Image 1 (tube, rainbow, N blue to C red):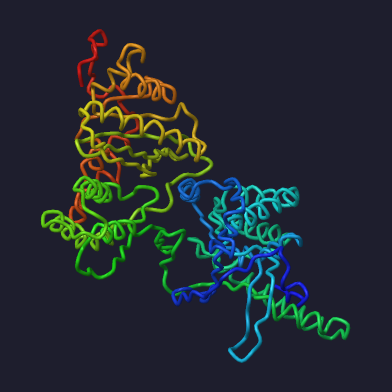
Image 2: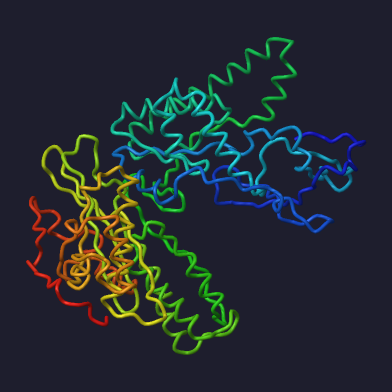
Length: 530
C-alpha cells in the first residue's frame, strides 16, 4: 500500500474500507489476518461490493477436485503464500481501496490506498484466480505438466494434485515452483503421503531458503542495491516448509491422516446451552461438513430433523417441543462416535489399470431417497478393488409421494451423480452401471416415456437421456448400500455401515451377473396410480 498525498484526501473518486483484525491461534502461519469490510455502505448508502462485479466461476467444484485428488497413488498438496496480495490492481482503481491507519493513538491518522487485490471485496476471488490461470496460459508451454495442474487442481489458493510415483512427484514440484514464480506466486506448506517425497521437498525448500539468503547477502555488498534490498527483505516473507509432528492435516475442511493416507471425521460442537431453539439446532447441523457424502446415512437423519422443525411451525428462537428436544439431544450426543469413521484417500487407481468402472445404487424410503457411487478397479495384475466415491441424499417432499415415485426420484438423482463422477474422473459412459431394487422403476425405464403420466414420464426421459436402459440392473435390497442412506442410521449404529463403506461383495467378483434376480417386467401393463 502507499500513502495518499494530502491534496487528494478529499477526492470524490474513492472509497474507504472499514477493517479489523482476526486472530487465529490454531494457524501455523498468518495467525493475524486483516478483514476488510467492503459490504459496509458509505455516506450515500451504497457499499463497494454493490458496485463490483463478482465475475464468472473459473475453478471446478470442491467435490470434483477432491475426487480427482483421491485418484492419485502419490498425493501432493500446498497453498500459495498471500495469494491475493501478489496480484496488482489497476492504478485507476486503487483509490477504491483506501484505508485509514495510524501506528498508535498518539500518531496522526494517515490515508493509504491498497495496491493489490484485497480480501473482502466481491471481485477478489475472480481477480486472483484469473491471474493465476493467466500464468499457466502465458508460461505453460515451458512447464506443461504444472500448467495442466494449475488449470485443474487448484481450489482458490490450495493445490490438490498428485502423480504416479516419486520421480513424477519431483518433476511436478519443480515445474510448479518455477511456473508460479513467473507470476510472483510462492508455494508453502507442502504435504504428501509419500515420506520419501516429503523429505526431498523439505530439503529443496531449505536449499531454496539458503540460496535466497546468500543472494540477499551478495546483493548487500553492492552499495547501489543496499536500500532496495533492505526494503524488499522487510516486505518479503520467505515461504516455509511445514512438517508437523502430528500426522493429522486439514485439507479443504477435511481431516486427513497423511501417515495412514485415510480421511477421518471429527465433530466439534459447542456445549449445549439452554434454551435449545431452532436457530441453535440448525447452527449445529451446519457444522456437519460432508462434501462428498461419505457419512450420508448419518447426516440424512439431521436433514430429516430440519424438515420436522419447519413443519412444526416453530419460530427461530422458540424452544423445541419435548418430543423434538429428546430426539435432537439423543442424536447430538451420539455425534462424537463418528470419530471412529475412516475412509481411504486413494481409490486404488493407476494409469495402467485394466478396467475402471463406476457402479451406482439408488433407493428410497418414506423419509428420503439416496444415490451412492462406487469405483471398481481391475489392475494389471487382475486384482479387484472397490471404493466409495460419493453419494447424495434428499429428504422426501412434504407433499406425500408413493414409494415407487420416490424410488424414481432416487434413480434420477443417481443418473445425474454417475455422469458427474464419470466426467470428473474421465471414465467413459460405457463403463457406467446403475442398480435399483425397485422392479417398478426398472419397468418404467423399459418403455418409452410417452407411455407414462407426466411425473413419471419427465423423470424417465431425464434418466434415459443420461444412461441407456441396458445400463440398469436389479439388486436385492439386502445388497443395496443406498438402502442405508435412504432410511438413515444413528451415529451409534456406525458399525452397520460396513456394506456402505466397504461396498457390496458381488462387485469384487471377476464376473458380475447383471441379470440380477432374472426378474421379468410386464411392460404391457398400464401405469398404476402410484
